[in-house]
Image (cartoon, rainbow, N blue to C red; front, side):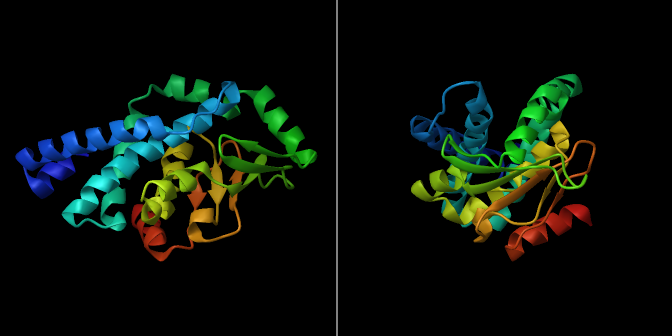
Length: 215
C-alpha cells in the first residue's frame, strides 16, 4: 500500500500510518481463531489475510477514509503479494493440482456432507453437468464473525473480494454470485479447473469495484 499512501499523505504521515497499522495488527493477532490440523491451514490463512486488512481499515477510517476507498489499496497489496510467489509454488499449492483432494471434495458433494471447520459452516455440492468441478455453500463465515467482533463489519462485503485475487493466482476458476456479507443466505462458491474467475456482488459499491477492474 505504501506507494498510494505516500501520494495521498506524504512520506512522513505514511510512516506513521504503517506503524499504526502494524500495532493494530499485532493487537489483533491473539484474537484470531485458529483451527488445528492440515485441513484447517487454508482457513487459518484466510483469517490472517482478513486480519491484515482489518488492521488497515481500523487505522484509515480514523483519517476519514471509507471502505470503498480502503479496499482498492488492500486488493492491490494482496495481488502484489500473490504475484511475488513463484508460479510453480502457486501451482503446487492449488487444490486443483491435487487430483486426490478434488476427488475427495467431489465425494463429499455427492454425499451432500455438511461440516463446521474453523468457524465456517460448509455444504458440499456435487459437480453439475460440467458447470463446475466442486461446489461449496458457506452458510456461516468465520471472516464475517471476526470482522463483526472487532468493529469491521462495514468492510465485510469488500473482504469477500480477496477471493478474486486468490482464484486468479491459484487457478481456482471461481464463480460466485452472492455472499453472506451481501446479506444473502449463503456464499455460493463454484470451482472449475481451467476456467476464469467470475465474481459478482449484490452490494452496489462492491460491484462497482468489480466493474472497474473489468473496464
